[in-house]
Length: 126
Image (tube, rainbow, N blue to C red; front, top):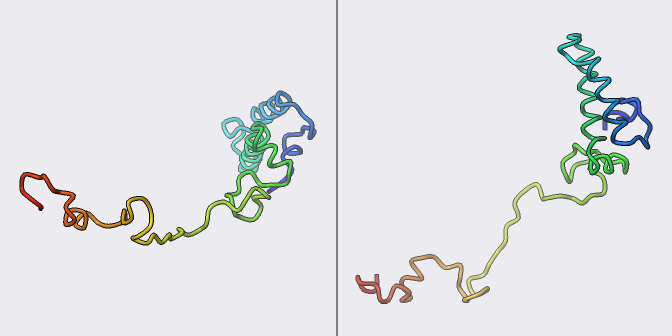
């Protein structure tokens, strides 16, 4: 996490959603790139926008208050104690041919046709 989002918007930690919205709008009018084209001001505008994005969303705000980074992908450092997420590489599963419904459901189409599942077809046994 980059900084204290509450301090960035100039609100207290127990600020209501309305107070957060008012603080963001006040700062956005002052720091918007169309009004103030200075590079440092544009960076500050990005900071307040990110702070508002987190604090205006109840779920992201709760994650932030608990010490997690709401922008971190699951399983990365800073994602907090919300689980490890998905593995970084695909998991290979082995299925034996004699397992599962129908005992042999993983066989290919040629096997099925050879075993007579094509019986009754006008061209014969295929």
